[in-house]
Image (tube, rainbow, N blue to C red; front, side, top):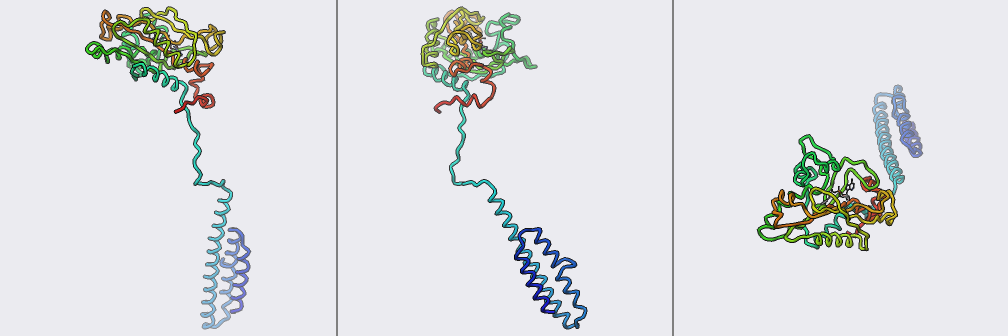
Length: 350
Ligand code: FA5
């Protein structure tokens, strides 16, 4: 009987050596340890033995059973380890010590132009003001000499909130608050009001290559004693030559805005077509960029400033259109498209 145990053990060792995967291992487990397996069969052959022999033989078979189970469990661990290593080898190899190569983002062209304008005006002593996008009817219209039912409102239909407030249609909506904020320093200490306030504007607009329903403007105001149109023209010229770093053809023509008197339209020769006419300038060769004028006495009064003593100029620069001209963007809608392919062309040195 001992011989049977020894030969079964040798057979098992030889077969186990050849096992290469889990399903083969499972078959060998059933073949040796299963209900009808070879080891179990050995026990069935004990019937003919004496009680003493049964005791000794049974113990040896149990030892064999334990050994077989132990070897199967070791083989299971070995095969699982091999499976994990094979999976790792199939994975792309990473070197965790390699420095990370990050794609560098870039600022939106409107942000770049806005920052450039802020830099220019700051060097000329202007403060940069931030103002809400949600404003009252008084701020956007009434304080600017545009009473209810005034036809000038038609040009600036915007989005109204249920509480009567509205999304500002022009950065001029901050003028009244700026005058009130700085009037005391002007009146008591003789500090001129010099402020710019960039911001997003909203209009119910039929969009085309140079009109968006959401666009950026940058308002600028200067109030002091003896401010005249010459001051206005000086600042406009300086701003344009600094932004474009080259001579730009400009034209100033009369323009009507209820909050300035006199009022002007400042147009620049279209830089997309060189003034020949294209969709970006509505085929006129000119682009309306920066309406401006001398602040209307009623507007100064609404801001708490005496128009008999002080005068001032105001302008409303179309920042989004400026970005179009500076970066050669033919269609204004591309700037709001969110397309990284087109926007990532613009970078700055920061
Ligand atoms: C105004 O908004 C006045 N508040 C500007 C002003 C300020 C005049 C101070 C006088 C004194 P206007 O609607 O023309 O004006 O807009 C000013 C500029 O914003 C335009 O010249 C243009 O460059 C830009 N702009 C106006 N509407 C749009 C639009 N729908 N899409 C893109 N840019 C626009």
